[in-house]
Image (cartoon, rainbow, N blue to C red; front, side, top):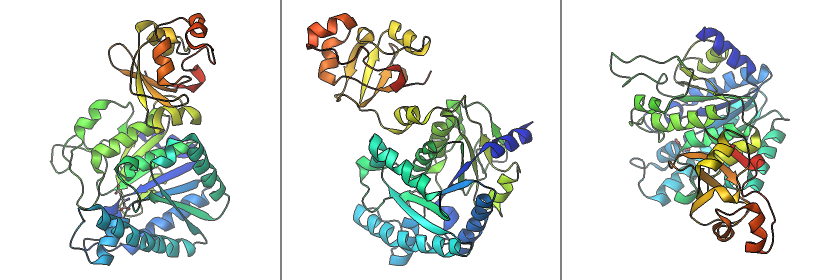
Length: 377
Ligand code: GLU
């Protein structure tokens, strides 16, 4: 049963997004593990030959930079961290490129910050760049732009970046390669815990299975991987977390071997536009709605009208994405708002027919139109 599900997931995937962690790519002494990269690239080549697109989201720049600059350990201050990233990134790309060229590909480097996903224009631009790259014998290799990334524009870590990149793709499978075999029922080092081969239904309780600990050189950890899994499975993509140090891991996964943990896609794929609204861009503010509006959005598939809005938290402009909360405080969806926060405050709780008298104009009947709304519950 679970083997059959695996085969189906793999057969349906047209794009494979592979996230590789620092610990997979580097050695104890902060040098890159060239043999590992060589092997991963060989396997990527085999996936491409099967007619699929491949995107690599790679870590390892900071780690490699630490080694190259001879730093005693991971720097705590931003300038040294960024210096290590700048130095390591060039080296990392050279190693990928050398390996890719032996199979007839070039490496295409994309260094991103969370800002590149925040505005619709930049997001679409990134999508277009990727789809153009797929027309060539090129493998897109993505990392966070660590040399300019500061707190406000950071993804957090590459697990988050990978799920955002995955959200850009259609019919994709996200494979997260780290140094543990997958998600265990408890602490992976304890003899009582066992590897979960298959997670059919996402459940937030899964976070309880994941320890907070991180590998020595990685930054993500299992908690973060699960956040990333949630983001991908909610929009209709499956995810596999597996051990990147296992011999031929990618080829074996693609052949249907039950390695790692497979998290199945939940529900139907969410269209790209709603993926962006609901799962990629960070909301600007919160909009609280009453029970009637909750029902209209969740049960009846309708738009949000001013009459259902009870309260606002934060300021926003027309066209921003806002989070929508029900009377219990639960976030039920996100949408693009047609009015700015001042106007929304003036029309909240009022009927649509009253808007003209209040604002002097009625640019939209809806506060958030159904087409620009992603509902979560
Ligand atoms: N972008 C970082 C690097 O290349 C890694 C971030 C992460 O491991 O999540 O070193």
